[in-house]
Length: 108
Image (cartoon, rainbow, N blue to C red; front, side, top):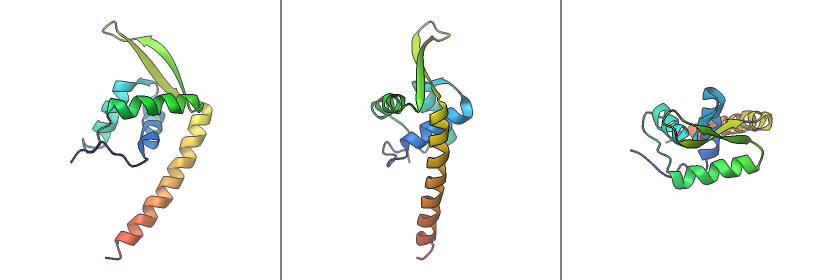
């Protein structure tokens, strides 16, 4: 099952992909999330690009225009030092929350 609703985890997913793969353009980020999730998660452009813009405004990402192999221009995104620090904190928080949810689900 694919889902367009990532319930507040989109920022974390974007930061994780960029932390592992380096600078990528938006479409490549969408594909990477889908690929790594085993095609269980799908991010729509209408969700991704506003998130990328917001993360850039917050200083977590830096962006630059590049020319892709096909000659088309694309905006490439990469983590800033602040973005790496923020990602580490959010990943730790996410692990704590998911562990707690997992414990509650085991009660049933």
